[in-house]
Image 1 (cartoon, rainbow, N blue to C red):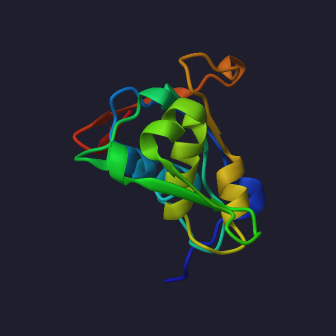
Image 2 (image 1 turned 30 degrees about the vertical axis):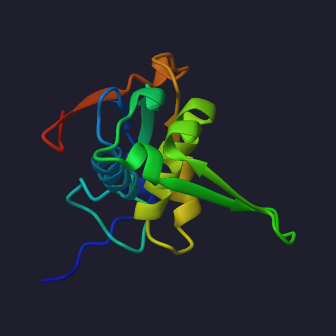
Length: 149
């Protein structure tokens, strides 16, 4: 039996919509990374970009468990001496809620040449409004940490 390898012309990309309101950050990031890579398709191949496009709304309403609102930190460095800046989850969700989800999903994608292509297919919005209505996205509900269409 031969291994099936999909051709680039045969790839069909769909648009999906996830509402992050009240969802746990880690579980949301796992589901998002699987959709972006194409692991939800039977034709998945790890060396190809077979994933779908993803829209995440209500990023400002994502939650974390435990005491992570104060303990989880985001670091950035200016490459100058003493240039380390530390931001807590609570401060980051107020300033840049889109970054919180992008950072979590980026950490779950493979560190290879395809990572940039995967993350470009994800659009994150802080509120409930998005500008991709023409693509007719399929809404995905997350129940008990699993995606339900």
